[in-house]
Length: 184
Image 1 (spheres, rainbow, N blue to C red):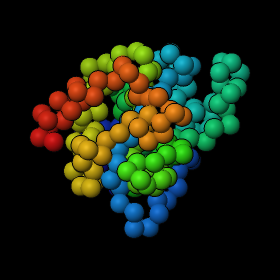
Image 2: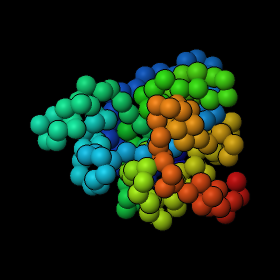
Image 3: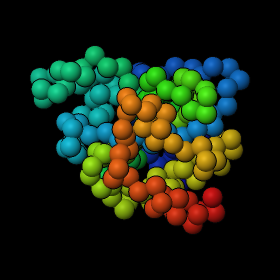
């Protein structure tokens, strides 16, 4: 697994328009772990791709009528089967964090990389998702040395009271154990 020109070489590339340039001189030094399922609690299909590319059909599900106007993205999605999908190059600012704060700094999108896991707060993530997540993080930490294991947060940590993902089903100890295997 390698990063070339901001792109993960082993990821399926789906270009999202929901990104822009990072502020000049701001280093990438935070990873944010998210969870997403569309419709909520359901997995598979192309609805996440459609959301991140502004092509979500509001008639396909009642919930989509609520979110059709959202302009959001993430850098990478890790599906339940371990497939990697990249929407935004890592050197661009993805629109994943919303109103957020980490270590006293606001606007986390400016200095973070967003990684979505196909999942839900109360449904266990798959073993292959943890393995892929650890591999992606190891690759990102090599490319962005300002990122450390202390600078990996859940969406719930940077937007408390507003967001709950990746939720109580996410096993942080398991992730950190896998990162130790990578020497991190």
